[in-house]
Length: 319
Image 1: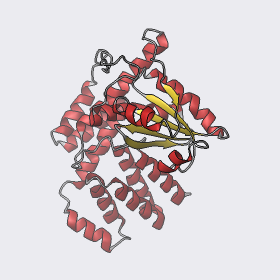
Image 2: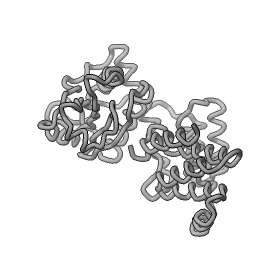
Image 3: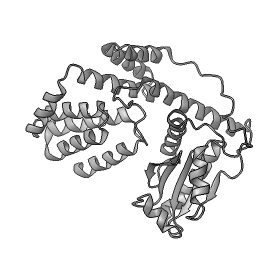
Image 4: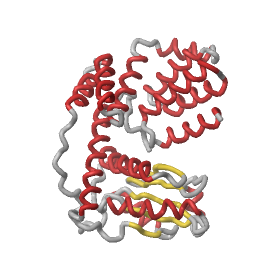
């Protein structure tokens, strides 16, 4: 999925940080209502089997109204049998804001190849006709929920897709929003400091939030962004890149260049540079590169496919 916290220009998109938290809150409220039996039953037809002949109608056309999650599976695949029921249950909890299309790879080799699936189970999404990789393997429930929360957010904010699968024609509108959950005042103050460019103040404010609530995803994201912007402030990008290219063994230069890569929107370049630095160094230098990479993962978000790929690459060079 695309980066949820960096704007196209490379600057930090504070609104995306706030929206991510709001999306998670709404999803939790919807799930709580479903558990209590207080919400309306989910629309029928949220989980469908799709083949090559029906792909255009069932997936591409529907993706203009509702995000379509695709589960590539096979009868012989053990992990698929673990992930499949979980996906079905979680998608149904969204009560029509997501559609799950299940594709048997043995019967649909062309789709398997077109999506570039490397192994199964593999989960993709199609939004407004665009394919987005989500994750591969039997992901744990928390990761599945976080990924789908983000998918709904991306569909609304970047593609303007807010329709409900199963709603009558002409009524493709979202359900009334739940009452807004008051924002943590300390977190709001941290956001305001970051938005105003007070990076030192933002860093301290986010740390204060995390001292009280170590699990706050918004505070972790905000802190990582504020620290990143603080590091690149005042850097001469041309000089930094020249130093990094001329001396690959200079770990500090590689760290500075990776920061600039990320702020400039070159996420894969930043991750690749640091993975290579970890691979060719040892001791304190290797640890510095590893920790910086983990910090940049926080900026992008753990469920972003680029983070998942880079994390796997890091594991390979470490172990």
